[in-house]
Length: 368
Picture 1 (cartoon, helix red, strand yellow):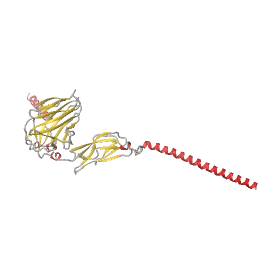
Picture 2 (picture 1 turned 90 degrees about the vertical axis):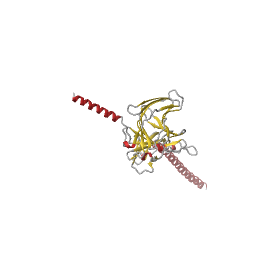
Picture 3 (picture 1 turned 30 degrees about the horizontal axis):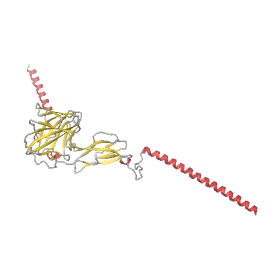
Picture 4 (picture 1 turned 180 degrees about the horizontal axis):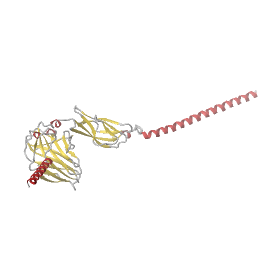
């Protein structure tokens, strides 16, 4: 009986440890002293037309289960706003992080804002950074908001880090401290006739001076062409780099595509057999943080370029060169025949002319 009781206690202890591990808060490379667990209280919701259902769960920490629908609505974009209307002092912190589970088969677009006083609203602008880390990955991705939100792909599971130094007012003014916050919230945006389900959990405030501070303060991004022409012949080459960084950088394509390569140093090569498309390249810094850039591959502009007289300026493709050569050969042969015919005619004319002159002279001598 004692052995059975001990075994049962051991099994229960193991189960508790497993559950605790699964639901533990993970913050990239940070010790417990570098972040503070944060549990929102009485999160409220509002929307500009979308149907939004929010269920909270505090069994394993604070969690929000959000269902958002714009089915049957007119064309446009609709926003759901989940917020905590509570005064806060975050002056000892440099960022907020939270875990996102996108349970949909389509991307979701989200962001965060902070309200100070009655009318000052701040959120990460299109020129500032947000950090994203997928589950089971040691790489943090640095991204910029687009149209006021960050896109998370379908079935995304991971953590978002939003540094407070990325927050701006609509007029561009910086967030002037985080000591007198009147409310804060998370924004989700959806187009018409769509549905999404996502969960928000594991809210944390990142203490000032954390290991992530270097990334929060970094303004370096990939420099290079965002539009690259597909060559007619040969190769199209474009160079990419990260200015102002002496760290170990390795470039790579997000997906392997025939006819497209990029070297570790950032030299992109495109061959003629590639079709127009959008690609992404990443630059991984020190095997810890990555930056991405989207590149649009387009048909060579020389194919549509024209001379003043309307003729094409385009360079001939390899399969057209033989045809041109054959055409030239035909022209050359035709010209040679014409020249030879003319020479024969002239030669015959000279002979007949000479004979006629000789015959005419003999007749004159006889008459004399």
